[in-house]
Length: 323
Image 1 (cartoon, rainbow, N blue to C red):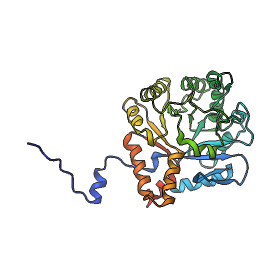
Image 2 (spheres, one colour):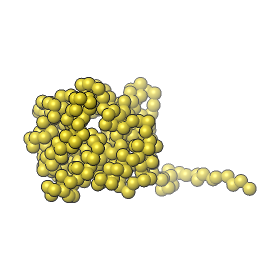
Image 3 (cartoon, rainbow, N blue to C red):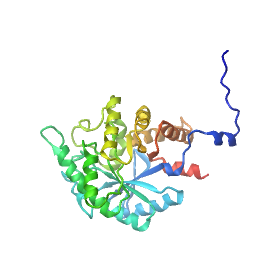
Image 4 (cartoon, helix red, strand yellow):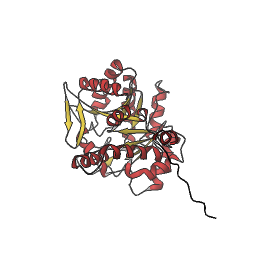
């Protein structure tokens, strides 16, 4: 005889007790954009509530984050001068190195992650040294400067590096370089499955990193390719990545689940700028219950298998969790 499934009749206390997926403030990494200069706090029109900030205002922001109970950040740099090889990223006095040192001095318990790439630092907006013959990035030449960038961040006191350029072999190359210089315990969070996505538009506004020609499809993932996406993350785990990542998050939850079921490392998702901006636009239009949709989205990331969420919503989520 067919037996009907019986759903528990639950009050709020029982619902919380048996909930399968939960959100905590410790799940989040908050992105910060540090710009050369002083006294800068410039809101980005396409990303309401997201700012370009100089180091002094970044320190004020970190104080607010700690007060909210958020203790992990990821840094992106906007230098005053850009050139063909991203020289500011290769300088011990560059904007990211300077910010890392200042934050770790003022807030030693803040867990600081650095985005490891060159698109914000180059005048062409691509993720490394150009191969003009093929109108793409020279993979092997870029690995060399990625290692230099990683060592500068390590010497500056960063807690974790996050290479995002999708260069072939980058994790093994970086692991070898870090280990050779005494940074065996510095973890690597790889942007292991990063799609050539249209969801990144607002990020390019805040990071001032739009490509001056072409696009990044020659070295980022085709959104249509599921098996290749899984293979990319598995390969980075084999090369020594400590944490893997899927970026973007919302349109790729099937990929998040596929990868989670095949790896042993923690998995992060990047809730990217376009996803954030769409919810903000819907909030401003009055067509959604913004806080409920936001929290439902965060639950979806965790339910799909994410252990870590990088999100511009993190402060808003923290305020809700604090109430």
